Length: 320
Image (tube, rainbow, N blue to C red; front, side, top):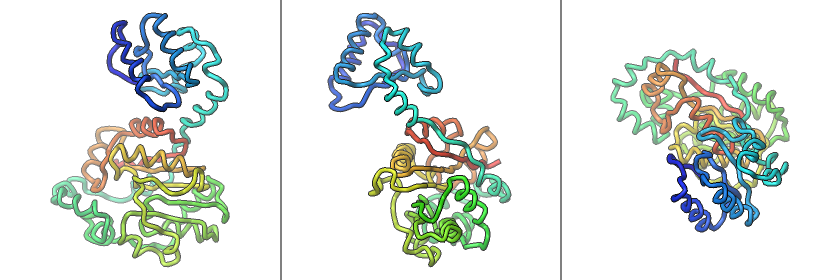
């Protein structure tokens, strides 16, 4: 529950009304303590209403993570709640859900080696180029550079470093089920498959051109799927899921859904997206990006991962 105003004594009935109209909920998370009824008696009535239905109550400092910034026991004391509300089982469950993984540095160092003329990109009828690029078909992969890659071909050894790092860091074996979301022509999953001598490495993409022109060794392992939609796989089906420079091409609500799906079907996870840390990098990515629908800073991505319940690792590509 979140708002931008204080909950005054004569307006906290709204909180009760919301709960009365919710047919199903697992608990209540307050993103601001200011939302609670001011009078102790009214607070107790509100808490009792939630707990009567065996629901849980969780607190957070506004716009910040509850588990990183708030000591639950102190909150309980302030608002006269008993420890039983925050059972160890619930604490462990929710802490696990929002515990974000580690920041990785697999891709950005190579990305920085490519020379880019940002002003030239903007001046070359960029709006038209963006419309063509967002189809993710032949022009994007193998057309003129102004539309995307300017020719996307397999280069012997190019993907070896990243493939080895993923295998090493995530302890992948020939028995590990692996999925690359937004795999393109499947060059990276081919390299992983080759190193592991495995047939359990898969990829999905929305580009018919990329799938048609993928590595012949991987054609049976690459399937068409829009990652903005739900996968048919069971929970934790894959031992490792990764997505390399794909999710920023989605609109914000779709990223939220996609990240939740990645979390649902993957045991270990890694996501890499385009982002920025300062105005110079923001200018760079705004000039260069053709297909990105969501251009937000690093902290905004971390916030998005957090509210999505993402527990995997992450990396950012910067246009310095």
